[in-house]
Amino acid sequence: MTHRTVAIGGNWKMNLSRREAVELARAVAASLSDLEAPVQVTLYPPFPYLIPVGEALAGSPVRLGAQDLHPAASGAYTGEVSAAMLRDIGVVSVLTGHSERRHDIGETPEFVGRKTHAALSAGLETVLCVGELLEEREVGRTEEIVIAQLDAGLSGVTADLASRLIIAYEPVWAIGTGRTARPGDAQAVHAAIRSWVREQMGDRVAASLRIEYGGSVKPATAPGLASEPDIDGFLVGGASLSADDFHEIIRAAVAARSPVSP
Ligand code: 13P
Figure (cartoon, rainbow, N blue to C red):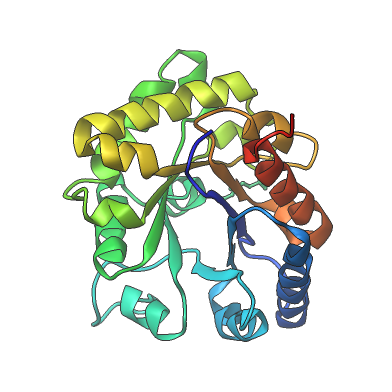
């Protein structure tokens, strides 16, 4: 049994209307009341809905997260949002390095590193996403790619800053495809990530760091993945748009970490 608290994120991506976002946030907050074990649940709505969703979550244990940020503190960066602005409106967590930003928007590994460092330094919990493409997995390069993303993404991140870090392993071929990684395959990458963290940042950070799995997580696939020792939670896309599915995934993750009665 690990002492790490299960962490579950709902990445809503570019979906929902303002009304739907507020309703979904309320439904997620209400659904958590029947969970006994500790769990950390964070919602990542689109930027325009951060404030109304934050208001809907007020007084509930569900946390407010943002999908992106700019590394600079302020200045002439049209269209961008800083860590301080996010904190100012109650955001406590932010995603960096999501594959949709690496591959569709063209963010480089170095830029992801600047964002991650800026977010951690500003006091935000930061979920650095890493993961390989299908063609990279097929030629056996998964670990090499993930380690290179960690090297660039966490450049300059000390053990102290890493106390606010979460890493999400999201194989690109599993995102939005309905194709989930097999639990053993995901566990192997999570274990490699944890050993890299141990080498770079020491035993204490490696033991406490949460590593989430993301990529077509559904109520049916969550229990198998969550029972792996280095899978500490999930970053959920499509299924987080349904309060019922998201709740089932949370329950499965919590149940996998709870002591089994004799
Ligand atoms: P899906 O769960 O829709 O595959 O998305 C995963 C993801 O990208 C979460 O950040």
